[in-house]
Image (tube, rainbow, N blue to C red; front, side, top):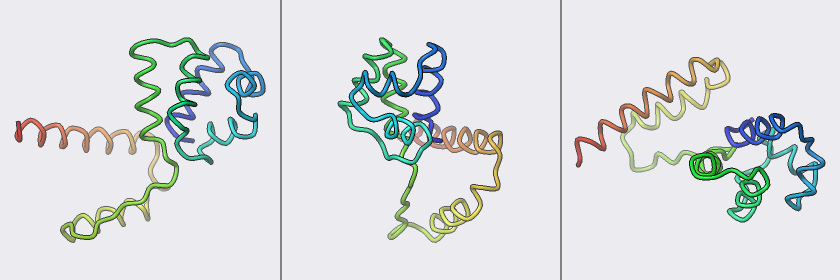
Length: 126
């Protein structure tokens, strides 16, 4: 499941809606919506994200969160390390080979550490 799929499912379940109802309302098949929720489909179009935002009648922060989640929810990530230091290739391969062994707490901790490192880099470049 992708972060976007997880959030869509949570919003749908909080409101007591089933996939068939939601799919019909936003103009997609129930099979597509199911695949989107389970991470078997790529990032939906901007238009579809807007329909989902409208369907749930979310505003401001929640709408921005859905858009951000959509941008970072492609289930098949491709990393190109050509031209980068060997350490970048090593890290990419280590993650690719082992991501399935990490539990959710490990994944969240690694993500937080990478975000923290990137934030420090951004601050020092400013």
